[in-house]
Image 1: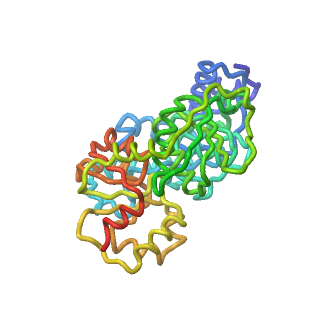
Image 2: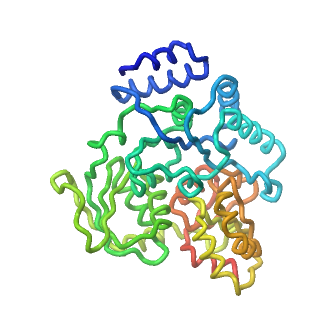
Length: 389
């Protein structure tokens, strides 16, 4: 991979050991993937923020980096393993909190924005069409590529941090136009109410590593958020193209290698297969984090209802969304905890719960593996009905 003279100086350690280490990582990745050069980025989204996912080794890595490096572009951070203000009510122990605090301090020293959300595009880090970025959160990556028109690979936490420090990333994968072209067409007949996340769940399994071209019904921005997140969880999909009824096809049909029809019946079958338990210890909504619009919509439904006694309830969101709708948050708090900084996937919920219901296709992948949960999928309206009366 060709490096400019200033990049060579960084690699040689002339700008300090932190920037040298970051450049070494970027060069290694570039060589592995056959990149010809480094390109500037406008922002980074860094994963590896929860102690649950990075452990003691991750803390040492970050603390070492933070001694000699700072980010040079706008860099936001993924959810932590706890709500910084209400961690005790989550059942998190003091030892976990202490180690999570070390992670927070390290990222703060590095200059990373303390956003603690998987939806940075709703919290101030929103790239423009055509901008190159280095984002590590899978659900945010697929949204940035597909809905915002930015250009990023699905980075790992260390590579996104290295890119943030240098302000550049290796030019390969989805940074190149030829790799952003769809290869499989998937026609979605219709999406039954509430099953949008499962449409993404099924599409991800079909597409695998390919960029899919999807023809389906209209989806709102929030529905695309959940749709893409599930797709990225069940497949290696970091981008999709989407066309709604009545719109002219936007892809070269000659590049499509396979065409697949996805009937509504298959989505209902998927829903039945993920139904799980009929009773749960926890209902968790907000994977990816709830937007302000979603918080308002749930509050409207629950406003005149009363809480049911069971189960526990988490509404997971960002600090920005939380602050935008205080009256709606107050309504939701009658029914459960409105948590910021964290989510059910990266929090140590296995310490307190065994069976969790969620409206997230992504959570259906990670709750059983990372959380040790018996996971049950329900549409959002069904969960709201279950937690109220």
